Each structure stands twice: as C-alpha cells, then as structure tokens.
Image 1 (tube, one colour):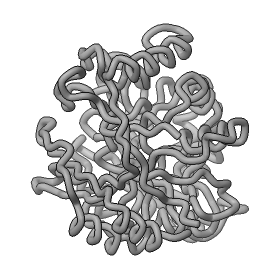
Image 2 (tube, helix red, strand yellow):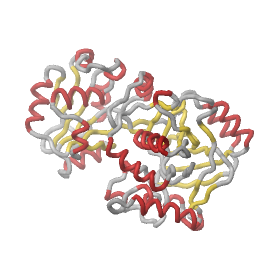
Image 3 (spheres, rainbow, N blue to C red):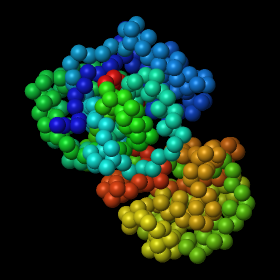
Image 4 (cartoon, rainbow, N blue to C red):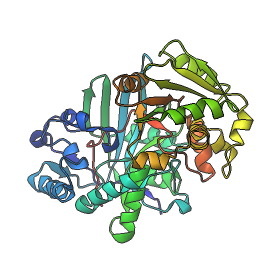
Length: 409
C-alpha cells in the first residue's frame, strides 16, 4: 500500500480570514519573539503555531477548533494532491522550486520509508508534542525530498485543475493547484508506491508526530511537502553558529591546540564569502569572528588527518564541514558540546552572513563560526549510511510557508 496519499486539504476561507499573504508565516522555529510581532492579522497561522503567552497550548487548541466551527478554515471534500510552485530570488536570478503537498504515513526510521539526516534535540520536541496534543492536526508541513521524483511532478503539472491561489510575498511568488480526479491521484499514488522519502526540514516535528501516533492510533499520517531530489530549485544555505558567550580560555584553546590540525589566517574584510567558498573547495574551512578582532580563516592542514580525529562515523559523515566544526573544533579542541550549549541557550544558528555579523557587532553574541553550505549529495550520502548530521547542518531555502494548507487525519 502506498505510504504517500492525497488528502482533503484544510484552507483559510478567503472572505472570512482575508488575504492569504497576510495569513501565512515561516515555520515556527525560524521566527524569534521580535519577528513574530510583524504578523498582525488575528487569523495569522502563528496564532496557532507559536506561543503568545506561557503555557497556552490548550488555548491554541481551542482556537483551532473554534476557527473550524466559525468557517475561518474550510476542509475540502475530495482527497487531492496539491502542486506548489515557489519562485524566489537567489544570487541575482529568479529560481523556481516545484513540489507538491501530500499525506505521508508515519513510520519508524528503521523501516527506511522516511530517512532522516539530522540529529534532534529534546526541548523543541516537548513544545511540538504539547501543541499536537491540543490540536491533533498537522499545521505545518514536513519538507521531504523524493529521489527521481520529476515524473510525479510532470503528471501533476499535466493534470492540474483549479488554481487555488497565486500571490506575491515581497520578491517571492507562490502558486498552488489542486489535482483531485481519482484516476489521476490513483496513478500518482501507484507511481509513488513505497518509495523512500528523505527529510529535508522538520525532523523535530516528524519525530514528535511519530511519538504521538504511537499513543493515538487514528493519527497515522502527517502533512508533507515533497520536492524531487533532482529539482533545480533546491537551494541549501549554511546556518552559521553564533555563541552568546565565549571564554578567553576557549579562544586560547582554539588557537593553541588547533594549530596541530588547522592554519589560521587573519582576513582584512567581513566580505569573506568568496574566500570561504574557494578555500572550501579543497579544505575544511571556516571563518571565526569576534567583535573588535579581525575575522580569521581557519582551514585544515591535512583533510584526512582532521577527519581521523572523529571516530565511530562513516567517511561520508567525517567529510562534512559541520561535523568537523562540532566534533573537532567545538568538542575536542575548545571543550564545548552542542547539547549543553543548546540547553544553556548559548548557541544559535543564523542564516545570512550579514545578519550574523550584525548580531555580533551589536553585542547580542560574542563570537561566530561561519560555514559553507552542505551539498545535497552530502545529505543523501550521510542519510543512506543511516547516520545523522549535527543539528541545523542544512538550511533549505526558502522555508515552506506555514498556513498554505493544513491536514487533519
């Protein structure tokens, strides 16, 4: 039986809720407290996905049910696949990412129907579990990758029916079509069969949903956004590591102990992206920056020697820059562990060099490590080995907006 299926989508009612561009938002985990104040619509999806006061999970569950009763949300009658185009600017060009929304059966990773690539932390899963308990619905999609999935997209494009919406959000454009004819959805489901999906984004939510499904037998599927692994619009950006505090002792260890494995070069500009990219073609390379000091390029002296410092992992895992940063530089050299840094709110992951630099210059963070992006082939290679990368090893850009469509099993 296929584990990827069409479903009756739940959408905002246009007349009652308002313009869809005012109702959607990025996923919950990339919105900080300051940014969420920009979502002013009383029906914005963040009213459900984010906490607005302490321990308001029950209140948000009641709001979800009330909005359904009031007709703010409308559930379609026919199970459908939903083709979704996302146009966005990147490096001076307009990029198109093609994907579709579907219901994805929850299954244990050991079954290899759904394959992860990223390690998760416990605290975000506790938050999402409480929200799931109160709403019993998939409010935000899990972003999946489908190897050799272009044939599915081609069928959906040929058979698309009603245009559900088309709108702009700044420089981005979004379009969605419904595909509901049973002979077409059956054909797509049969083509998908039991093919494996790789999680691109949403590991915490997937694992939370899987746990919830074990305790609630009716909750067997979640909302998935599926993109072909070969899609030209798949873009991965690096999530730079910012440290809220960093002791002088840790900095001394970096330069003193690190010299056995790395070379350190002062860089005379904060426009170091091209330097980092070029060095990253041949070395494990990073930029270390503290306010009041010049940036330092850190590059491996001998790649194989650095990678040998990591034990109990495959060669594919050891070759990741993010693995070298966390296992060798943070843990072995500087004596810092990711889980502890997270628990003490000392480590943040920031996408965008300029934003990260501003946060350090403003004093909100003491220091930062800047990386090159992980490549899609590296993601698949590590996932196929059954391993998980350190947290936030990938940032698929742009994020899939929450509120486009929702799913209730």
